[in-house]
Image 1 (tube, rainbow, N blue to C red):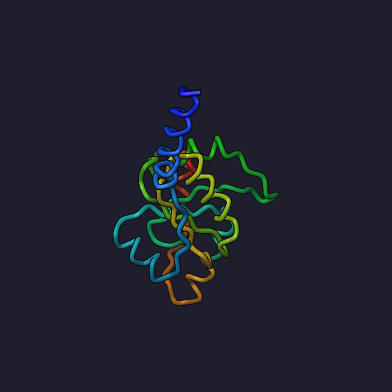
Image 2 (cartoon, rainbow, N blue to C red):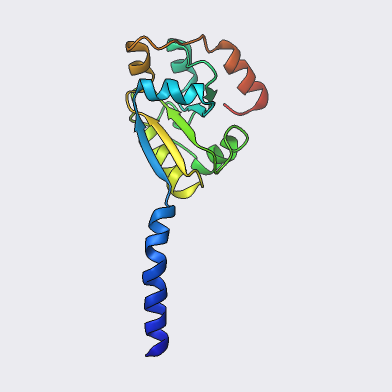
Length: 151
């Protein structure tokens, strides 16, 4: 009985600490994205190559497709490709077309991959462009990530 009571007390004390240590996903708007970019937080664009070519990309974004054109993903392979771009433990911003695909990716990063702070761009690249956010052609970034086999 005493051992069970000690275990209960120990778990009761540790549970709040675990909740406090939990990673978080923060939905951000365009002003917050601009500030994070200025602060040097890595931006990961998870869209597909045709999407990057269509709209351009946020300058400095790292290109790493999560879902293919059919909506399939391989989280383990994707996470291995992510590590050289944004180390676990560092904050990271994820962006897609409209903010929908980044939701499950943000959860994966924060809950299973060791990224304590994940910023999800609520309205994606379309919202960024719609509010006057600058984009650059994706050509050079695509060539670089292809050469490194990280796209």
